[in-house]
Length: 92
Image: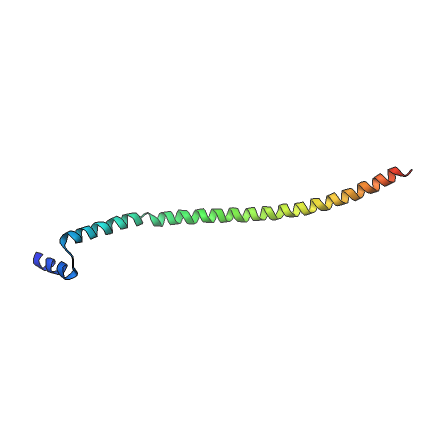
């Protein structure tokens, strides 16, 4: 049986040492990839949280721009009212 295994390895171009080294490299590679699915799910959660925050920020920025426009309109109206009042007080 051992001769069959050695012949099989020779046909593949491998030695017993290279087979063991290949298995060790494959095991190490798998060990480094094993935690990746958990990290990907954490990354997806973080991305979803950030996307929600970005949406909230964009809504807030839109509302702030609306408030700025309203404030500009109110300042214009106030200056018009102040101009009318100053004219009415100036001429007795």
